[in-house]
Length: 219
View (cartoon, rainbow, N blue to C red):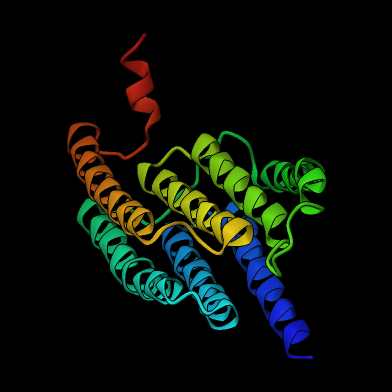
């Protein structure tokens, strides 16, 4: 009974992570995107805690704590601070509309299940069902980076992809080695800082954080 409950809780957290990604595709408010990323990170931390409890791998508790500290608290505050500095809150220009983005997200979810189905039979962990959800989150994050034109929203897409990557690592092998996890966390945090600096500089130069201005420089 306990094993079934743990498996159900893990699946629930993973599904909620996917749901926040789909909701992020459907919103045009940048502050809402940051809030959805923070909420997704909460579910990732909860999933990591459940896996650590059920598997007895203590290093996953460290991953859980880092997720809460960096992704639930520090990174959203950094992104909010950057948005306040460049005075933007809306993302109204999309390469494809919201209905098209949702349709593309649905196709990516189907594709993820098709890709991962041959692998599921070889995975024996209780988190095996999370693998397809992990690939879905990564692909949806990539979709956000491809269709959004503001640098901050592209950053949120990158962060959601990284959440999907950690979900996949947990599903496959109860997480990566601790040193790799810590390195990945701080690499992403440095990336957010660098992207924030670039966004500020883009805003100073073009009075906008629309990355399409940068593409025009090649023409």
